[in-house]
Amino acid sequence: MEHIGWRPSVNEREFIETALQSDLRVDGRHSFDFRKLRISFGREDGSSEVQLGETHVLGYVTAQLVQPYRDRPNEGTLAIFTEFSPMADPAFEPGRPGESAIELGRVIDRGLRESRAVDMESLCVVAGKHVWSVRVDLHILDNGGNLIDAANIAALAALSTFRRPECTVGGDDGQQVIVHDPEVRDPLPLTIHHMPIAVTFAYFGEGNIVVVDPTYKEEAVMGGRMTATINSNGDICSIQKAGGEGVMSSVVMQCLRIASVKATDITSKMKKAFQVDSYTTEKALKKVKRLPATLPQKINVTDVTMEDKGDGELETQTVKTPSDVQEINKGDEDHRNIKGNSPLTGDRIAKHKQTSTFSGGPSNWGPYSKGVSLSSLRISQLPDPATTGKASSHEEAQPIKLWGCWRV
Image 1 (cartoon, rainbow, N blue to C red):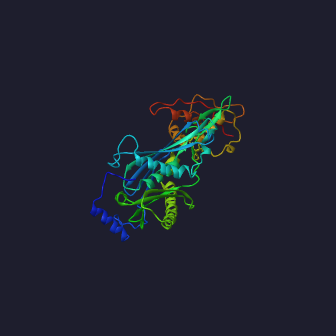
Image 2 (cartoon, one colour):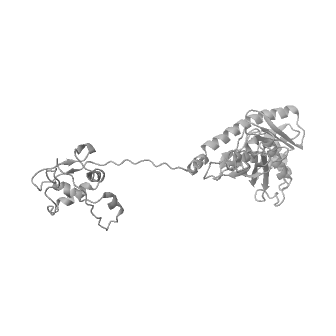
């Protein structure tokens, strides 16, 4: 891809070529060194951002249900679209994609689609009627050279994080497609068999000087270029030699061996960025909790001890377990719950100790009781703690009359 926006002068061309003959490059790298690679993922599924030196590419993946091709009724489709903005390079013109944009899209599409990296059969919903059409949009934000490698990595990173909605087939005829929202069912990732990595080589002179990852200025001086797409297993997915100087077969084989090593290194960096990046953590936090589980809370209630010396005798009642009460009727069950569960019982007992002696109640409560405990009658007049918690602070809770416990 030649750029007519910047033409190097004679001195600049001689300087770059002389430095390359001495195994030196303008940016200080060696011949087979890549620039610093940075991969980041967006907040939405299927978005990625790649920075390769000064080259900046943004990738975004979308999908929709379409009718498949007649020759492949049970396979989905994958399309690559590129957008060259004048903001990235003054040589890029807005409007219709130019020759450089078309070439870039074809090289990446050949490496991904022809190598069967994405499982197309998994994109089929109803054979011959409905399949998923995956679209990859690549936006060039800054052109610092070697757009093919940066755009290829951006496309792979975006496809790795893309999630398509889950759909089911139903209806009376069994042909109706129902697309579920992410709140109903979790979206499904794409099935990617391998990662085809594009590695670009630039040739200088008569093809004797070869460098990896050419910069913007080196592309203006180079005599030829070759892009090899290889996965981490060493399988060659595609090779493109874009005109220029002829290259010997021995040089091509050397470039393929170097590309295999670089592809393994870039694949490991991409997987590491996908695991370590905050993308995985953010997606885990955003995961919809459809059935929130409510955990029971433990409430520690201290034992309540009541003492009453007003009648001349000491009565101590310690509420621990229901087994401490030997005889109790149905009305005493609420009274026991109030004493055992209310943390305000101790405070209300202290307030009631300062009141006058109970009057108005019978001396003998029943035919089988020996007498009525004064402290039991006072506790029985305490309000329900459930109602006091709901009432406001300035309103007085209504007392609830309960049957009191008697001393056995």
